[in-house]
View 1 (cartoon, one colour):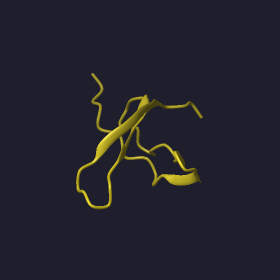
View 2 (cartoon, rainbow, N blue to C red):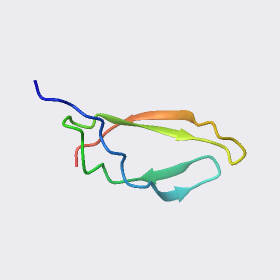
View 3 (spheres, rainbow, N blue to C red):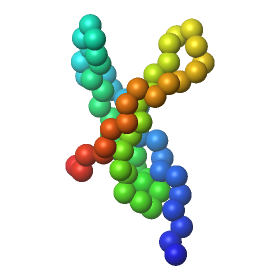
Length: 64
């Protein structure tokens, strides 16, 4: 059995576009996938006056 380790975090997200109601982000996949294909990402947010993060959306990874 091949051990599987947690993947590294992706690169720092880049803000591509901001509108009144949304933001478009992009990032590069992690260099180390932990021995398994990256299947998706969880996007989280927090307000400046809080230490708590909340999940916004979970998106599938794109093959590229």
